[in-house]
Image (cartoon, rainbow, N blue to C red; front, side):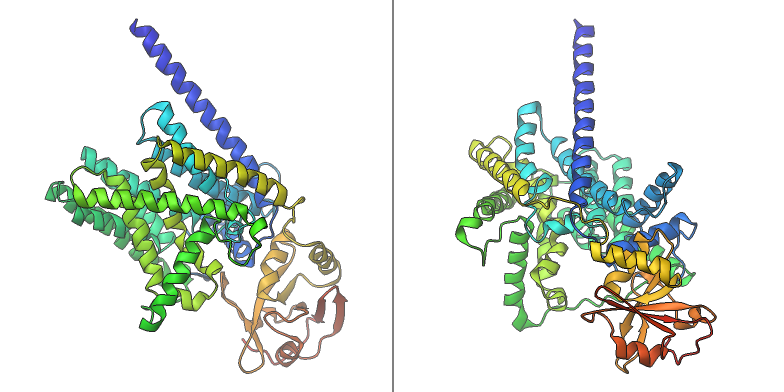
Length: 526
């Protein structure tokens, strides 16, 4: 009898594993296709170039200037690994196709992590199917016509921190339930790696764990103290690694001065933060015709389920602190800290648009999605609503997704690149919005540095997610300057004032191209 039971369990585990692998593979293929349907940004292209530099041995990114979320432990190494594997297959290491694969892998990693941490806390196939029904319309199949869905198709957009954060909370829960020092070490390592790449995790990960340790009086003081120590140690170590790397010649990050919002802006910040949550859920119908916003209106129910789940966990934790599971409460604390950090800071005033601001609430989105799946896996009404919304979302996505891939460049910019490769030197200057994409699309044949208009009417290098440089690097070289119309980050007047009269002037589509000879000696701004 026992061998039969063992074989039955073994067969079930094998079947479950194989099904999961097949499902993830198919979802990855779908994600790559979806990521190919939207254009890429200069931020993504520039971080991809950083990954190529890591592949070539500059793993500390000497001379690079990155953003405060530097993605040194997520997007950049993934770019390097993908490029290396692609090169082993005989393909160009800098293939633009990888800019579609990379965000797809990260997003599949986020979705797989959410499913995993939820399934590990549910028993039986019925509960897991219920949880999957709740997770699918929120994470796996978002409303792709929503402005925020576009961010999923990009990299360097906080996805790596979501994976580190979820698993850090998971292992914190495991440590509290088992006392395993391996779990405690996993918390410290995950927080260290996550905070290195994205300082937001210090709030949503470290902050949530420490807050729970102070609230969870039913655990021993020793357990809570060790958890706080491990969380703080991982975070402090991350900051120390970044500092040591910078002062010893590695990359530096742009200054990030976060302030509390002025008192008179708090009301506006709160409203913008709430709207950002609706945008994340694809549930923001404002300004749209009623008949064409049915999907958005239905998805408001997903927000309602999430808020109801959060309220239930908060009430249960308040009434009986020794009976509420640690993981759901840490998810709730993470989401609450994420919301407060945004609403009380000046980030909203700096970024302006709710669409730009909403990406800072990605942790809240994932936390609430997991919380909903853990609270309502057997609630018939919730499952029926989620299933209905999933069907409506899939139909809407099928009807509204672009028919063809955009590729890295538009057709006009592809024609421009062909002209550049044939008619101008390989080194040049372009606007921030096009330089990175053109350089990646050229497979390294062109090196185009972004420029930015200065107050004195000249053009200076825009050292943002790029290596430090000045225009004297063009000494003794022929080079070109690419001027888009309408003007983006500089215009013709600034170029002439900086570099002087060109040897040749070309026109291609909406671009004017100034070509300068190798012996040109302009008055340059550095």
